[in-house]
Image (cartoon, rainbow, N blue to C red; front, side):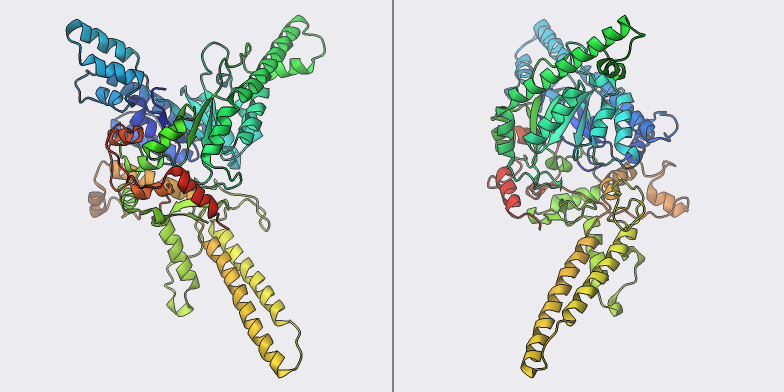
Amino acid sequence: MVHKIHIPVMGICYTADTPIRVAHLGITSVISLVDDGLLEEYRMAYAERLGLDLGSPQTTRIGRIRSYLDFVADEVERKFTRLCACRFDGGSDKDLYFLMLPLDSRLRVEYDGIFAKTGLARIAAEAALTEKMEPGEIQANIMVGLNHDEAAFDAVRGFAASKVAGALVLSAGVNLSVFEEIAKCKDFYRTGARPPKKKIILKVSDYRSALIQGRYLAKKGLEVYEYRIESGVNCGGHAFFESKKLLLEVVQEFVEKRKELFETTRSMIAKYADSCDAGGNAANASASSAASSSVSSAATVPVQGILPPPSPARITAQGGLCAPEDIAQVLSLGIDGVGVGTPFLLVPQATSVDKETRRLLVGAKPEDVCISHASPLGIPFVNLQTSTAARICEQKIQEYFAPESEKSGNPELKPGFPCRQHYLCQNIPGFDHPVCMASREYVMHRLAEIDALEKEDIEACQMRPYNADVEELQNVSQERGLLESSIRRKYDKLRRVTLSRECICRFLGNAGREEIREKSPSLHYQPECVAVARGSQPARTREPITICPNPDIGYFDREYTLLEMMQHLYGTGRRLTPKDKPSAFEVEERLLKNVLL
């Protein structure tokens, strides 16, 4: 990789086409594979915009994921080839490729040196430098814990079938069944001097989790290409407070135990490879003999000649690293790179965000980002409270608690949301089928359940025995009143939590859908306003949008170019945030002290 900074996955849509935007410039980024339908929308929108014939829409989840990744790979290759054919003139995209690199980068030093050359020496230097250019990697993220209707399995299969020679990022928990699915694909194994064609990245928040997962994969002969450490609380989106360790502590532990982790997993891969080779030889020598366990194991391996990795896995870190000094401090510990997400939401060249949402991000203050109950998974969620989805949830809460005479009766403000995509459905007591905790079905059920629990507690309070003494009767009456108020406050809080949940599996993709419509507003190639006026298209209502940056978004106050942002992060250009901005590590420590109860 030419850069030490990559753009991690953000939401469902925000980095859905980021490789198309930045990979030809050498920047690695990550696509979310959660919403295969949205990926198909992107593919068809690009086909319309570029005048390409990409065939009919895909009808299966695997087909949609594979087709989109193939398109992304083709488009990155096309743009990179065109970029390499450009001249160095100081202002081309080819110059931009090098101007975004840190000053001490080997390629940047060579680039700066070509302008001192002339004639044939200059031509030769430019050609040599062009040969060293490489695109950023296309990576894809799977939330392994979300396997409703085999979604995670299909994402693995779609990625494995695609032509992308990048990495699969496994996040959101541990799912051994997903590991088993990966083990069925030969492209994830090392069988030569080069890394596997398709690599594995584990996104983790502590060393113990990395060791457990790394060992399990090693038992299958699979190596981990990179351990991607993420701050549990300062990364935007879902927050995880379990480890209660700061990012710097976790990174330091990884660096200190890197050799131990490498040697442990390498020996396990070597042992597995030996058993497979021995099993294969035994099977060839005596096909009629009884199959041993090693022979059986060898028969299920998709490739022979597995080799262990020659060097330790990469280590990177991410979560709140939005200032050059924070990035420099983490890199100084000895890791290989960092992920930076939130600031790129304000870089139209890099991320997929509609104009209105980007405007909200520009105006956001640090206090507008808070840890909320918005996630239907019941996990604390770092969320922008000025987003359209958050505002709708607040309106639903106000409507629910308003006196009957003041209710608007607006059907859009009914508790809960229609459950269209079912990605976050879970098995919940009281239901005979998986449901989402943001769905209208669940929310109405839960509110009725809360009402019953509150009534039960109040009745128990009223049944408290007391003497007929007048003074005691007055004391008991006051005590009951206070207790009943406390009970109502307790259950009102539960109601607010229930009504706060957003349909994130839809709303985290809506900004991308809105941007697609802004760029390709009509299938009839008409501006939307014209189509509506002619009656050929009904007026469209914007869907709610959830966006979940970390609090650092409040320190960026406008849209930026890709060059501006990269030079800010490397500390080679104009600083884009105030010098007195709290460091990522101060913010993380503060968040850990204010754990959402």
